[in-house]
Length: 257
Ligand code: IPD
Ligand code: CA
Ligand code: CA
Image (tube, rainbow, N blue to C red; front, top):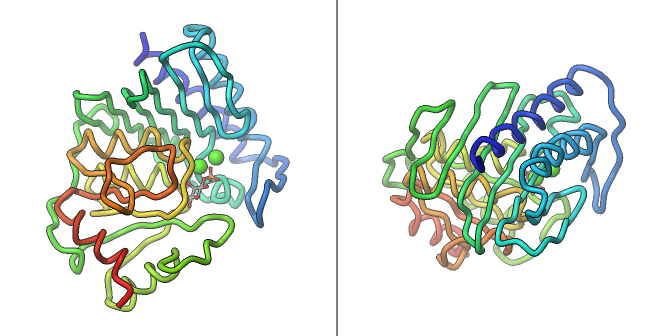
């Protein structure tokens, strides 16, 4: 029942964003510059909530636009109604619905659905990861120099030592291809599918990564923070790789040289 509801909820959100994509919709700004929210984000969230609340009215919900619906439950649904809102607002089909389900503090299921590419990624803890119901696994690349990486940049630039542009520049100057799709959930799923060898980002929120990080782990990858500790979606930094380049990518991130 949990799995069916998760799939139904992701499909419901995706149907809404697909409908809005072709037409016109209201766009407003959140905190920061170009941190957008559209009518479609709210409508997708509403459609997702309806599906979940029908089956599991007592579950806790954490969702980007609505915030927390606090319930005394071991289950928590972590929802991004559109991941890649800036892409969505500009008519770029690189955006998706992302929903993770946590039980007792452990991510147990995740779904990421990009209806424009018709790509539905799913994982259940201990049962592997799939793309459109076919098993997926991470790449076999062993060297960062031969890898294709992906990253993202926060809405408000982090002017820190080893901040996003410094790490990006370090890799690019050495000739390592680093892409920027604008959807962390897709970045993670594309690592899981072996398209990218690794992904890192300095500042994510739980809803950006909750589903994707389980999908990477279940596809055989490794996900940590910048210190190499197992990833928690409640802290900002993420490194997700095929596991083989993980330590090397961490040292690129920390090497100021
Ligand atoms: C954003 C995307 C982007 C990442 C940002 C996120 P949103 O989410 O995942 O790739 O770089 O940090 O905020 O705002 O499109 O849901
Ligand atoms: Ca997001
Ligand atoms: Ca979002």
